[in-house]
Image (cartoon, rainbow, N blue to C red; front, top):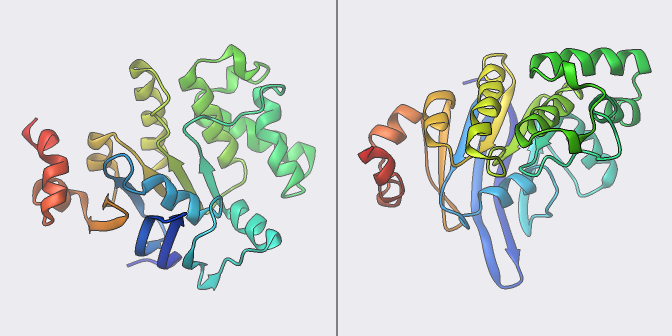
Length: 246
């Protein structure tokens, strides 16, 4: 067991009277690739948004290296500089070039020099195969290219953990493979990753732990070989039945 980076303790989240997350307890350890799977509405994306403080939990705690991430903007900004997020809708600035999108946060948040921000941007754009497009605007890119730029932009912050919220769900089927390929390569670098995904084969092949969520609970948390070949929870078996039959 490696060093614990993030601990989620008794996390609950309600929207009005609807409880979306119910008593979530998860430790995320250094170097783990955790894939979170489950039906739509099971709370997967809400959990990710609570981890990154984009949603305020109703109760419970998010701890980073044992210290609670308080609901104070300074704490949240520091936390997000180390725990990045890649969204399903890319969230690129349309009025900026690919290069400017990647340089912005290191310059504004980390206060690195223009030269350092440029070097980081070029390094990570090369990593995701987007270096030839540094002067393009997002409107000139395909969905898969936009998502690869979004991944490079997150990497430019040198995060300790990277969260992915269904990063392929907004893509045409032929573009899914190029983004998953980049993520598979990233998974070999030692970066800690938490990925909400509907891509079952990717979760099986890439994750070191797979979490199945059902109706706001963590129903099963196991190594992928265990979860995909011998699920213990009846709901996990039901969810995976079509995949397992294939």
